[in-house]
Image (cartoon, rainbow, N blue to C red; front, side):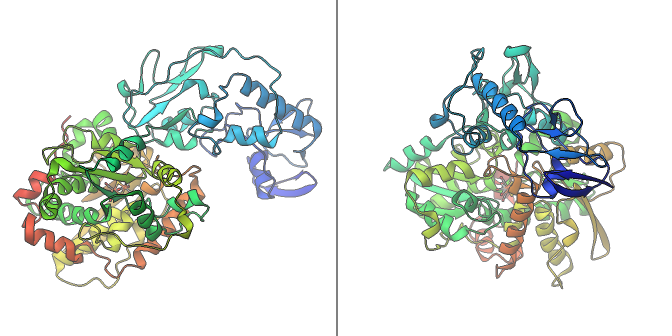
Amino acid sequence: MVTLTIDGKEVQVEQGTTVLEAAKKVNINIPTLCYLKDINVIGACRICVVEVKGARTLQAACVTPATENMVVLTNTAAVRNSRRMTLELILSNHPFQCPTCVRNQNCELQSLAEAFGIREVHYQGANPEHVVDDSSVSLVRDPEKCILCRRCVSVCEKVQTVCAIGPQGRGFDTVIAPGVDMVLAESNCVNCGQCVLVCPTGALCERDQTEQVWAALADPKKHVVVQTAPAVRVAIGEMFGMKPGSVATGQMVAAIRKLGFDKVFDTDFTADLTIMEEGSELIERIGTGGVLPLITSCSPGWVKFIEHFYPALLPHVSTCKSPQQMFGALAKTFYAEKAGVDPADVFSVSIMPCTAKKFEAQRPEMNSSGYQDVDVVLTTRELCRMFKQAGINFNELPEENYDDPLGISTGAAVIFGATGGVMEAALRTVYEIVTGETLASVDFVDVRGLVGVKEASVKVGDLDVKVAVAHGLGNARKLLDALQAGEANYHFIEIMCCPGGCIGGGGQPIPTNYEIRQQRIDGIYTADEAMTLRKSHENPAIQQLYKEFLEKPLGHKSHELLHTKYTP
Ligand code: HC0
């Protein structure tokens, strides 16, 4: 341990701790525009400079280790002047588009400029012109707004191990891009949007499709239905001042209904359906000597990752479509028929925590209703924009329920939104179907939480079912490397693209950090516990769906509508 003094406060930290982290420990907030704990620790932005007694120059707190008897001052005239000058230099090369920027009022650069009272920029930047890259169906990249902090590069490389973007060019001409003259759509970007979550400005954002939804809502010919993903309900409240993890399902449903949707349904309904289909696929593969381990297929960033990086392992991926796409296929078949609406007039919107879902909806495999099954995917952030445009007072809305029957779900479905949730939901059902016994406890806690790779073994009848769960593609890579090396002796693996699972998706409110991810996960399990039914096979609307329409899991209709194949 070392002991140092920061602004007169004594603090004890472990050897190797930076001054920035030591300051946090005593509640002293040092601003920064590039730092990300354990991910981007490069001292690039120079905003976090502090005075260290005995040092000749100001030191960047994020890369300066705390040492014994060190005396640090974080708020002196020299420190403030340096930070102000750095901010002005950054701003001198930044477009002044704040009112029209997607990150207006949620921009770290803007907040700091405001905090430091910058009213004038005394420097003239080079301001080179760059083209906006809007080639991706999920993400938009605006190099002119980029401050070269490298957070996006580090997240893409170190957390997701995708390495889709990096610095290109030199000096004022430096841009963060997939390659010289290359656009995102041509790269191996998996559309996860983790780069968007860490971008301090508006240089990276989701492709906004709210206008398409407004147009559909205004079209009297369109029957507009919406589904909301499990993870949206525990995050959306943050954009209206609620605590992270607040379960705002009822208000969200009420607000969506106010926008004018004809029906408000729940992705959780088809999450339960996914368990019926995927659980049956697992039982079948185990029973018939099929390819094992079976790996979940519901996270589209993950699917694109395995297609790019491990195509030989694709036979392990479940043939089940994701709940979003199962919903889309049913909306324009089963539901349209039931509601007496021409499927050509059904406009199907989904609200997702995820930017990659925009990509998934447009995949050529996702047209089994005879139309594009899901027409538009909006992220949590885009939905909030619509609420704000409509003047909806979210916090004051009385709670409302989803519409029937595609709005009925169980606790097993809501936990899909957290890492380990799909696995836990599957175990709840597979156990009871195989053994015919009722589970003493539905809580499989070994697969919960933010540990990168989790393992468990569950006795199901005579078989010890061995499972593993990974979230974040770097962790997924570890499991896939083990599988390739013949060292992954599992029956079933859950992989979610984003750290923490969908609650940490690239379309969620900003900020999304480690603590907030944990709070949203807590919200997910609170929502699960509040449900009367907590096992997918007990969902009465799913039972009815099989009776009326699908007949049985893995049946002919299921194969037609709910399954697909990803080919290398
Ligand atoms: Fe997810 Fe899903 S749980 S991927 O994270 O499986 O985005 O929330 O909607 O489809 O249900 C995202 C979240 C979903 C799907 C579900 C799955």
